[in-house]
Amino acid sequence: MGRPKSMTTKQAKDYLDSHDVSDYNLVDVRQEWEYEEFHLPGAKLIPLPELADRLNEFAAAKPTLVYCAVGGRSASAASIMSGQGMEEVYNVEGGAMAWQDEYAVGPKELGLMYFSGGETLLEIVTVAYAMERNLGAFFTQMASSVERAEIVDTFRQLARFEREHQATLFKIAKNLDPSLKDEGELEKRAAVDALEGGMTAESLMEANQDYLRTAQGKGLLRWP
Image 1 (cartoon, rainbow, N blue to C red):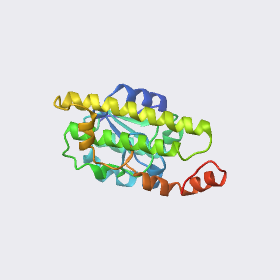
Image 2 (cartoon, rainbow, N blue to C red):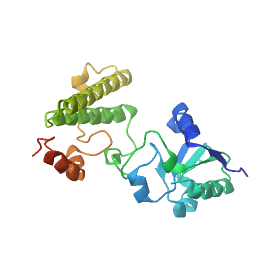
Image 3 (tube, helix red, strand yellow):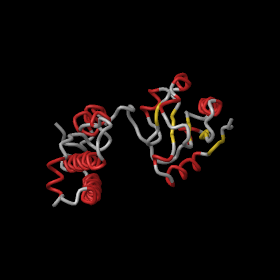
Image 4 (cartoon, one colour):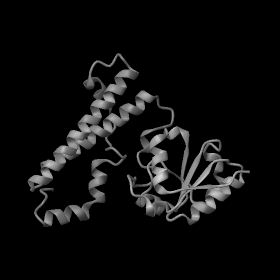
């Protein structure tokens, strides 16, 4: 029987950056509301009280990084996993509260409605292309709706970033399907209306109405 080990958040970040997502399990054992506020990118939510009954949901032979808010619940989770025969389990000390790098927000289902699980890699790349395109269009729209020049420039720069991401995804799609002639052909396949991250522009605006009203009140936005 293995014994759980520990990682700092810095070590965990380095590990995640240096390994493919298919090489490990990343498990969040907090509650769903905590996960929705923010979580480590790619983490699977399994609240601690459900863990013992859901160990079959990930590959036991892979290294497993488990975290909670500050490290207490994840220490218990790591002990449970090791007790069930998992050989390489790491408790991320300090947990989400000590995490200083990129994080994700929203419920675990966000964006998954666009996938059935049986998609080809090309189909996944096509959905990603559509989401990047839609986010770029959103940034362009926002650039035309703000008053301050520096904010306009920021939105325009963000839109350019998304355009670069589209170009990268087209190259990947072209490698997967050499018959693709240009991005216009990929555009026709990219029918998803969500932004990168899974939200539509409408749902994003609705979720941020308070911020938008504040910006309007300060004369920063020209938004209907």
